Image (tube, rainbow, N blue to C red; front, side, top):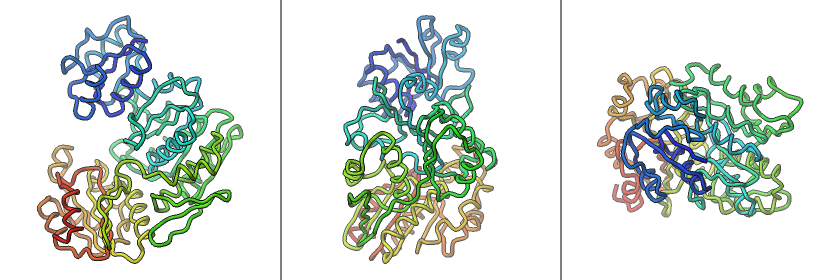
Length: 455
């Protein structure tokens, strides 16, 4: 197979290119910018383009397929030539489907928790020594790639709602046609892509219709919106598996679980992770993994990158970093920390970074999500607004949207550093939540200073 990647430098695109090269395919690619770690990863595999930019001469009739990344625009000269030659053009999820026609496809969708749920399933299957391919949106311990394509009989995919490519605006998870589908919950986000909640909900309605006959839908029964949608779209030819929070106990800041007489102590915590674990168990059960193997694996699971990951810990102080940015994710993360450390003060530091979170009309969705924090601050960067070409944000709009008593709102890194220096961290948990960088704040250094008592 000869395949050309347009926008080979994308986070998933370059990983897919490497996976297919390792499978024995002839791979070429192009891009107008390639950043780390994609640059080094491609170079190590001999796939780094000789020059940066687009070149229609890369496109010819000898190609079996062209895979188009989201970064490429509709007027991309290579895309135009591929269309002119009537070549097979795929977005990456469309191509993943082509590679998985003879596999059992597991697809994990939902507004929150899909990366962690996918990671849990992968971790268990690896522990059980089962052969499987995968597509996941984060770096996972024990896996050198985020995409793997072989002749394995199963593929586990994280399926998100973002558009598949510049010429295929439907969500990625619409193209994966699962045999085993997971829906972790529905909470409106991506206001720049789905302008109304109903429009967002419709994408999940369509996803359910794509489950293969005889397949399974595993869904979070704690989510009333999702439960209503499942009941509304119920199909006779598929099987339904509602799940709830995994049965557990929390003692001394440690979570333990039991399943079919087997017991384990977990390294992750929080009801949102216990919900993810329940979903992962339902999937693994369908793939013939028993409770003993499942809990053995889960006892060693440390989470996906930047999902409630410990940064620093000492007597009386625990510092975590989390990718949480959408309202439902922020609330779930804060709830998890408060449940795990009920006697400690919670200091929550949230950055608004996504298009939705920086939109004045969306701020009301954050109402009350930080109420359980004892001290809290919301940070946003004026520079981020400029880069995203968004209008200015008034701090009063953020205060009103969140509605939390005593909430601080800060828009420059210096003031955020000062706010952090002024806190009393005795007997506390500090929670940094962001999909950004707090305008370059060095969280490792700040955390070291907190633990050392230098703040």
